[in-house]
Length: 289
Picture 1 (cartoon, rainbow, N blue to C red):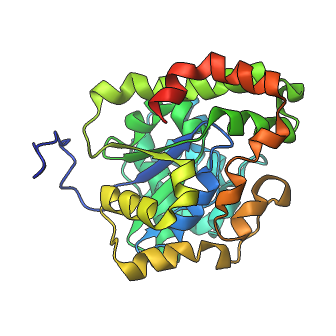
Picture 2 (cartoon, helix red, strand yellow; picture 1 turned 120 degrees about the vertical axis):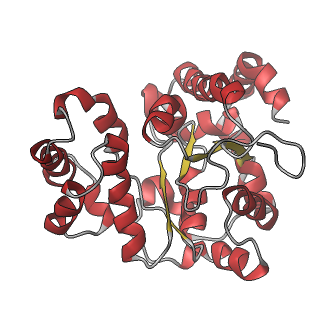
């Protein structure tokens, strides 16, 4: 199938209500994009729940999901285990478990039902999910949700590394942070030849902050959401949403985009450290401008 512009489209291009999945290297701005898109009147994306990849990795232990008892076991694992963040969906666990037991007997369908319930709760027709780790584990996304539309956020590696250091990741060492950035980019790159133009979109964090209206119109058009002036205006008011947020990790999401912070990494890294990141990632940095 081809688009009017001659681009190759996937077999899912005409399907309504496709899942919208956001991934990236950590500290790339996925929370900002998620909060913006969650403000759209047609799309609901919760805060990170962190059970999808874990369920996919443990899929064999849940057994044949055609058996209701196994579906109930999976549902209880999602909503009852101590480490689960499914509570962020704001659902009644008992009702959610029963909906999962009644869902089609595949892992992807059961996991999708969790997010469908979140969308229903907020009166929206479409659902999405956000987690940086989806970039490095993109195989799980297509295994679970073949009709998905993946939005990969790409941020300057110097900024990512500086942000990870600020949080104390990797004992403040830069090399592991740079390796993580490269791995996220290269894993998505490995899937690029297999995906059609309606399945993968890359968005630069710097564009999202410097020209948010244009960037959000592009994302909305890609996933098939209304991209008119009113819809974009609602997404730009993302910071007015009343949500529990980590002041340490996501303080900037509580305020409008600030393009002056895009290059704040230059004050956080020494000249030799900047040179190291640039040398290690030069081909990819040049590709993304």
